[in-house]
Amino acid sequence: MKNYLSILKWIITLAILALLFNNCSPGFDQTEIKNSKNSSEINQPTDSSSETGISEENTENEEAITHTDIFGKTIDGNNILIKGENFPNKAIAEPLYWTSFEESDDPESDLIGYGRFKGLADTNITAPGSNVSHRFDISRQDQNNSPTLNFGDSNELYVFKKIYYDFEIDHADNMGPLGLNLKILRLWSPEGNNIYTGYQGLEGSTGNPRTYAEYTGQSTLWGKIPFIPYKWHQTEIVYKASQVDVQDGIFTVIRDGVKLWDRKFRMRTSNKSAKYNEIAFDQISNGTGNNSLNIYYDDLYIDTTFTRIMLSDAPNLEDSRVLEVQIPLQWSKNLIEIKLRKGAHESFKDKYLLIIDEKNEVNKVISL
Image (cartoon, rainbow, N blue to C red; front, side, top):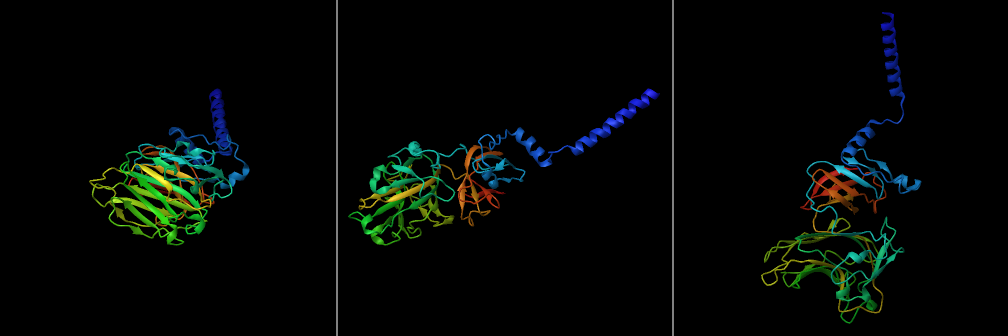
């Protein structure tokens, strides 16, 4: 009997000590435990901050994500996972083309079509949040040497880019014999029908902007996008092919978050039924003057679907003025992995991740 009581006494004592030890053990945060467990189940990428030697000055940009659907830390360049349901479809996670122009003097080597960017890395004129831009002198090129990318047989195209024009469109020394005819955006088909937005320097400081579907269009869209030099612009292009002989195609430009027009275009006819398959940037027609005409590019993202993720200063597209495209690494109906990009935003605090669907509409909003 005494032995039994002694054993029972020792058991009770050990139980009390175990409880005291657990309550006093440091470093246990229930949120971290939950996220760690869930992250292991979905193959969370390892936080690379210690491995890549991120300095202490970078830690001020780090804010813990408390949203239960996100796994990772808001550090610029870090990979994070977004777990949820019914994300929009994106058959290929990575975009057709992406470069930040940060890693190489010649990142445009992947561009195919007429030619490549004939420019240089530049650190003097850079977009907000960027260290390097790409300088391209359009006075040194002809139409067959402009930056061009073939995007295949897709019915859709989405482009995000940052652009800076270091010249005035109407300066006499910038013009050729027939003025300065600059097509800043142009989509081509194999049959020659095309749609463009362009300027003519002979027609004033704004370039008298016009958008026209050449050979198939019914009328020109005038105005809407005046030429503004010496300033970085965030530009998005949204394109959807028209049906043959139907004015239902989309070719919309969004500059600094503002949708500049909402008009449909006839892009194909019975005589020219081919869809556009190439995009060209900043084509010059009819020559230039004696001056250098430098254009600076940054953060060029091109994809054949509208589906994407944007970091925004507002919870909807209508009110967003600073948008940064995020780079998808994997994508499924219930899991997305992205490389987080702060870009022009000062921090991630009070910003939003907007998941955009196939209709170019916000599918989900995630507050950071």
